[in-house]
Image (cartoon, rainbow, N blue to C red; front, side, top):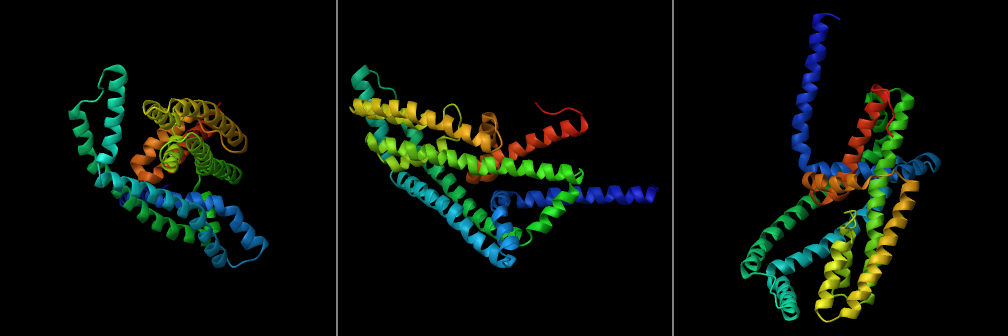
Amino acid sequence: MSIREQYWRYSLIAIILVSGVVIFRELRPFLGGIMGAATIYMLLKGQLEYLTVRKRWRRSLAATLLLIEAILCFLVPLSLVTWMLVDRIQHIAIDPQSIIRPINHIAHLIEERTGYYPFEQRNINYLISLIPKAGQWVMSSIGNLGINMAVLLLVLYFMLIGGERMEHYFRDILPFNRTDSDNILHEIGMIVRSNAIGIPLLALIQGLAAYIGYVIFGAPTPLFWGVITCFATIIPLFGTGLVWLPLSLYMGLNGQWGAAIGLSIYSAVILSQIDNFVRLILQKKMADIHPLVTIFGVFIGLSLFGFMGIIFGPLLLSLFIFCINLFKEHYLGSKPR
């Protein structure tokens, strides 16, 4: 290869790298929407092939139908949950005493039973000062979520229209032969389904079971705490205990010891068994994702993508680990255990 050809090659690589960094920086606020579109596309890919290949629908018509399905099945439920949380947070921001009163109530109950007052007034005042800041952060996150939803729908539509060409393009630029590339794309699809279906499905089932328990044992605002329990399931080991343990303690201190003990037993037995049972089924049908990947993936996702990072953070970390294992297998001559 001549010096001129080397100059062209390395100049082209430099241009690609610099342009890629600039584009990534500018698109970073919209990464949640882009990754969301790619995730939903992989979930709808089978239906798209069925409509366009077997039923011979026009691709534009199939894309429009699947876009409506994505809105109804993914975005509408997410929007409803988000709206409920926003309404609750707005209520707290307008009336901070609505959260301070229960705290003071619990503190006085503890003082009556133990003679010790657990909260200092300065700590309560500090908590009150944090409420407006937390409200501003949440509202900012909600605004970003709305923008990313619009980006998701736009990108998803064009992915559904040009899905085959997009897949061929990515398959061609992968540094593997055709067989390995197909296997890699299949594994990526398994990881995507495991995160995009497994995590929300587990959260929904446990949240529903928790909501039933909250209703049975008379917990306050059971629907709200049921939704919060859905999000808590993302955190392995502690998970739902971060919600039902304080809730049971509050009910007990409030004099409802029978209901509190019943809720604790129900949650410790039923919710934990549901978690183990659902995870066992998902591991058999989907990729086996280590709990630590979920934990750190959520932290990474919330930092990068905001609210939508709850799903896309573990997905991104799973793909990163998969690529490391792939490099180890192909270039270091050993298969991951």
